[in-house]
Image 1 (tube, rainbow, N blue to C red):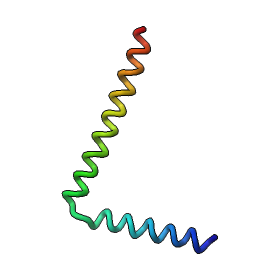
Image 2: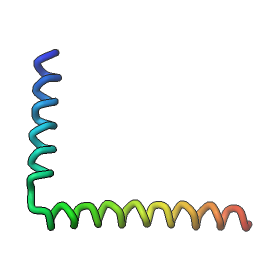
Image 3: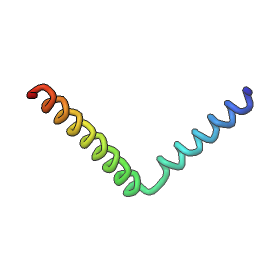
Image 4: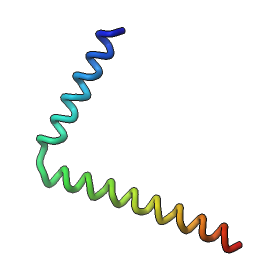
Amino acid sequence: MDSAVLASQVVHKDATAAFWTSNSSVRVRRLAVFIKLQYWRIVVHLSSTVSVGSV
């Protein structure tokens, strides 16, 4: 059990290191996509709450 947890932590650390050491343009693009998705989620949430409140 402990070895499995340790292995998963090592894999996660390697994945994080690979992410941060990858090409900066790729990193920026991923961040932009993430922000865009969050933005649309907020917009949809706000519009749905406003439409419900106005009814």
